[in-house]
Image 1 (cartoon, rainbow, N blue to C red):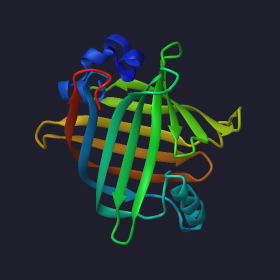
Image 2: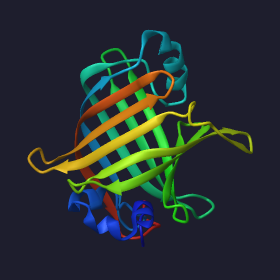
Image 3: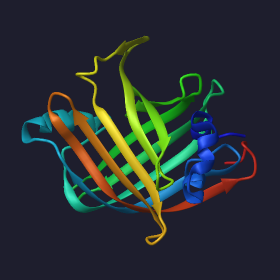
Image 4: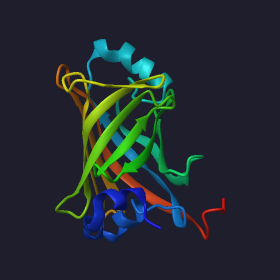
Length: 213
């Protein structure tokens, strides 16, 4: 059984660090859930954008708070939906002093285009396609490609000038025995919107069959 990221990366998946292969190799049988905990430095954005961030926070997208050594957790879980499509849910929680914020997404593979499709927020009103490559440190570089606004049964492709540009770099740091992640979200019109960087120590849950819970 092949995980969604291996379906997109193909043979390049074998070039990843073993810990990266384990985390991004989640599938219905074997390791199916990863839980990471650590601290992040979160920066970026301008004051006038705060109302937009508050709206995004309601849908478990981005949020207005920023800070250093912000405790966070991230749970990635492989599952199969009612249509039989393999998906991986990403559940992120950021624990600020006065509140906890969320950023959730569900990913699935489009092997024909060699991209990962990323439904953002709890509503899934925004979908991005992601291109993945293996980096020199045997990690992953993930870059957003196209972005759609989902309105009912309609998918509206956003022009590049309006679509956010997302770049993610993640690798396994053997000295820290943790995953190092760096995320940068920019706008062609407004510059950097949000960036965060830090480490996550990760544990796994396994099951013997796809029917075990």
